[in-house]
Image (cartoon, rainbow, N blue to C red; front, side, top):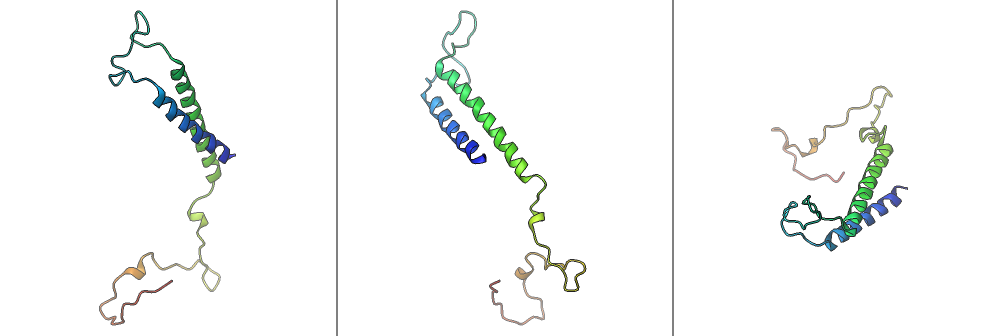
Length: 121
């Protein structure tokens, strides 16, 4: 189901881009300058492309919210740390403490004269 909504979402995005690029530019940015749509208001009359743009935008937002809800339901109750395996100690008691991350990247101590050879773990 998520794939179907995602495909619809992508098609809506492409359609929205196409419809916006087909519209006529009004000249001045931010709503300045527009044509005389009404005798009193400075708003232009709604064209068919303008209405299609609104419909595609509303459908795009709805699919965005739907995908967000689906992703939240899929990840509910799980965490990245839940997926990590904690090694048990040999005596079966408390979990063994793993070596700190990056400990193999530390420089050798002062008394250590062993050659520095990378390990392939």
